Image (cartoon, rainbow, N blue to C red):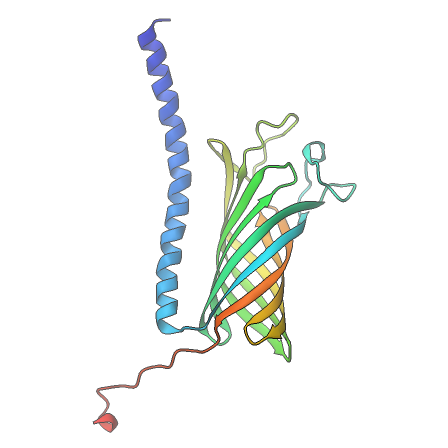
Length: 228
């Protein structure tokens, strides 16, 4: 095989890999642009907001896991596992009970690979009673992980698509359940059950810090007769 032919094959393979990675990156860019636009819209209307940082601890896989490649399982069937990580989130309120919820999680999955999840949801307060509050969130999420294809014994899963050295899954319907316990005026102890991977829920605990609890006042009508 001549040098020209080898060079042509290499260029084709590189172009294919770049195009797959570019599509994956483009999806993340689209989500980021949408998140930025919604933050601006919500923040313009209302200044009530908070940030959270939580530690992900245990996870539970809804479907049957591949137990032969899991190295941090806590149950015989492999569904309960230890997947440590951190979850960041931001809430911007449009009303006292509804907010735009943005989350970003990074974990070491049950196969000791780096994984993550980016979520964009609408969050609702269901209950507030003394020091207790309960929220639910619904929306979309993008889950991704370093590919498991290089693990001996791994069987391809329909839940994930391939993109170079990563596997990913976009979910139109995702969710989170959150319980908060009031500590002081600006901080809550927070517990979450969240959609951490494509077929897995995670259990996280951490602190919620209120940037502001004051709603922005609406401007009066400057053209109304009563104001002249």
